[in-house]
Image (cartoon, rainbow, N blue to C red; front, side, top):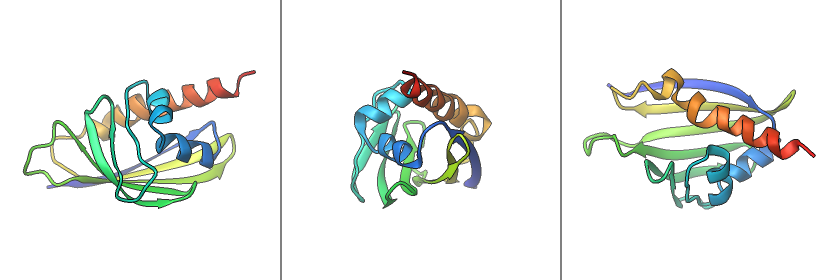
Length: 134
């Protein structure tokens, strides 16, 4: 039975900077440390983590919201795409990134159990903090 979970983190950058980096091939690659091919268009396809992740942009609201279909190479052919909703808002110290990951197939708990923190939030914090240094 697919499940949904929500995580949040403060990233040391503006909502605009996070939004732009997420939807830019080199920005996404640099902030995660792995090759990505991104799109800034609704319906546009993307890959991340050297092709481990793939999907499409379903909804884009400038500097506020990104909704993407999302699947990894570990999903079975019978698994539907999961849905990733990223909401960005100004916060003290940067942008509050709230991530809702829905329709996640059973057996893929690593997302919730440190996967997002280790592979996205921590590298993003390091990337954006380094950009702020003179």
